[in-house]
Each structure stands twice: as structure tokens, then as C-alpha cells.
Length: 200
Image (tube, rainbow, N blue to C red):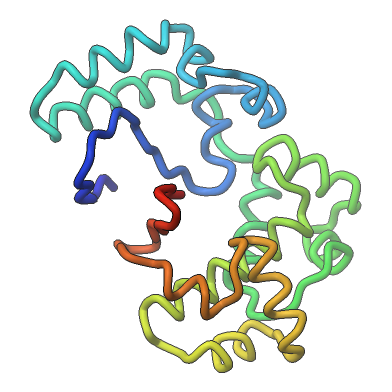
């Protein structure tokens, strides 16, 4: 679903937020091949520079969105494997500290098969995705002011403060308190973080 972000400087980029594993359904390519591509639109079989010019030539935001949506829909190729859908659902709603072995057992597949599914369709191994999902849950809870840092950490099964701070720094480059001080814009589940004239 498109949403609007106010940016007070020149910007010539398009940002598309895909659900986990969704991008490969449009490209038919593994994440390894996608990461090797300089221009992801080229994978759609069209010149990326021409596509971007065509979109930015439209002054109306809604028309830009419609053109981009049309490009994506005409390239929709495959759906996610069922086992991957089950895995993502278990990780998202499980409410427990899942290990890769436990997750594979719940799905009735081997850990190596689970690893290949995630690497090919998500771009991360299962363990990294589980940790990333936990970090995003904590960040969303804090941003939406539903919980304090300590409560959010405990709710997401962090019982060691040092471990919590370490993981936070790995994903964001900042401690929890430093990160919150740098967040200047929040919209839905997206946070734009500014510092030293950079943004991410």
C-alpha cells in the first residue's frame, strides 16, 4: 500500500517495500542474483533508466504509483513456496524463541532444506531472519510507544541487557537510546533515521 513521506530536499529514488520473500515472485530470480544486479529493473527485461524516466515524467504521484504497480503485476511470476509461507507465519506469530532446528521440525523438513528456502527467497539464512524479525518487533513497539525499552526487550525474550544492546548495535549501528534519539520521522513501520547528513 503506497504511503507518503515528506522529504525537504531533492530526491530521485524510488523505494518499494516488499514483504519477506515477495521480490523473487516478481523477478523469478534468487536473491543472490538480485544482489549481483546493479539495476533491479533490468531483471524485468526492460531498461531501468528508461523505466525510471517514464515514471518520473509523471507529475501526479498516483499516476506514478499506478505505472509502477503495472510494471510489477505484469512481471508477477510465481508464488512463495508453501513451506516458506508456513515458516514466515510461525516466526511472525510464534511468540517463542524459535531455533532453526525447532522451526524445521515444525515444518517437517530438514534444516538444510529450510536454509535453502530462506537463502533463495528471502536473502537471509533462517537464524538471521529470526533475529531481524525480533529486532523489528522491538523497534515497532518502541516507536509506537507501546512499551519501554526494558519491557520490549523482555517481551521479545531478551533477558540479558548486554545481549539486547549488542544485537541492537549489530542491526542499527547504535545503542537503543542512541537510535531513538536519531529517529526524526516515523510512518507506519518505516523509520527514517538521520545523522551526519546521511539517511537510511
